[in-house]
Amino acid sequence: NASAYQLEFEKQSGQSSDSGTADACDVLRCFQDVCLSLLRVTTSAEALQLLLSSSRVMQDISHTRDKGNRGWSMSVVAREWDPDVSLGREFRTFVVAGNVVAISQYDDQLAYPYVVNNTEQIVTAIIDCLRLAKPKLDELSFATANMAIVVDVLVTPAPLPSSPWPAKVIELTPFGPMTGASLFQWNSDRRILQGGKDLFGDLDDCERKCPPGSLSMPSNVDEQIISGIPFRYNLHHKPFDWQHLHAYWEDYVRLAPPSILSK
Figure 1: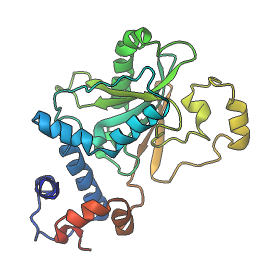
Figure 2 (figure 1 turned 180 degrees about the vertical axis):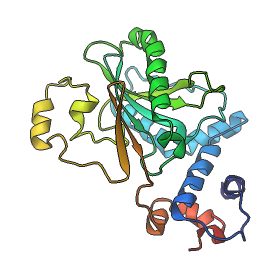
Figure 3 (figure 1 turned 135 degrees about the vertical axis):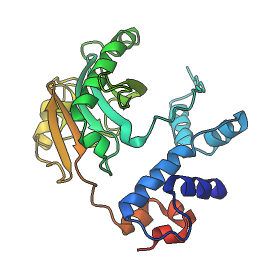
């Protein structure tokens, strides 16, 4: 609700309502942190309220029910809140036949020094995480020769300088345009995202319509090849101004302390 949002905004921003101004990208980062914080619940009533007010839950259930009630099954899975989870530590990983073929920073808007300065550690952590997860993917038939999935992975800094960086799977999502490609493109980057395999028998046709490289990477995006895997991340913030903020985060702008939004 509005009061919970405003309280979280003050906590996340560390600024009072008369504390001055902020850059549009700084405000966007604050909005994202507030949005994440409001997903934390401590009672069953709060959990139900979150589910019942979610447009994404409504859309997913409606889409499933459109296919009919046969085989209909739904579960609610609860897990402990992890304070280490943040948007800047999440990575969209493309997996074909159980192997990592491409990785992107999940957030396609903002740049994070944490990512820019630790690319090799992040990619190594993700590769190790998916290697350990492969037996489970095999059990689910997600690691067969022509199977592709998208795996969102959390990577956190090593607890000690000599320790490996921890990584854990956040969720598995379908492979294809119904799932965002973050800093890749489903059309011009199809060969990369499919690990060079013609998984669906339409790769040549796709590349005739949209040749590889025909859509250039934005100037704020960088790509490194680490252990043979392309890793894309924001080197700088995506061009983002106050008009974008008002257009895409209208409710948040309406509820935010006015001085935070002053230019």
